[in-house]
Length: 98
Image 1 (spheres, rainbow, N blue to C red):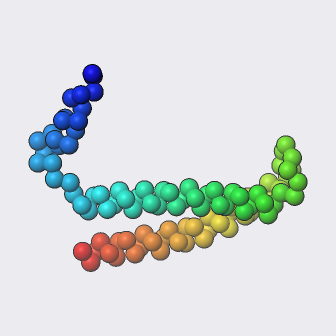
Image 2: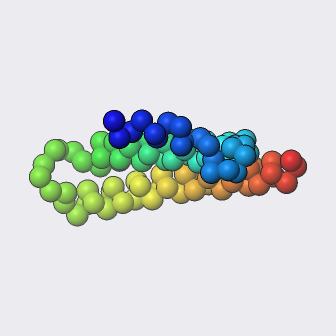
Image 3: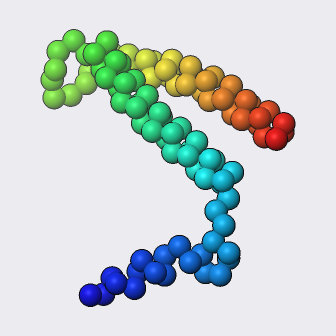
């Protein structure tokens, strides 16, 4: 059918010699892991903050619940940013030593 030619075109690299840069692959992998971690963290943060702040499941959040969630998320994001900064500076150090 239509897609029979796809496999052979793919991976020819358009005459670029088809050499994959392992450094690039590593970087992409690290980014994917970081994104996955961020999503998981966001999920956990939301769960925790909602459980902590909301006494009764209802349709709408009242003011104090909204404030509580905002504060809770802020604290979480602060620690996340601290970790991210440490991670980034370590990455840069590793790169400088390569």
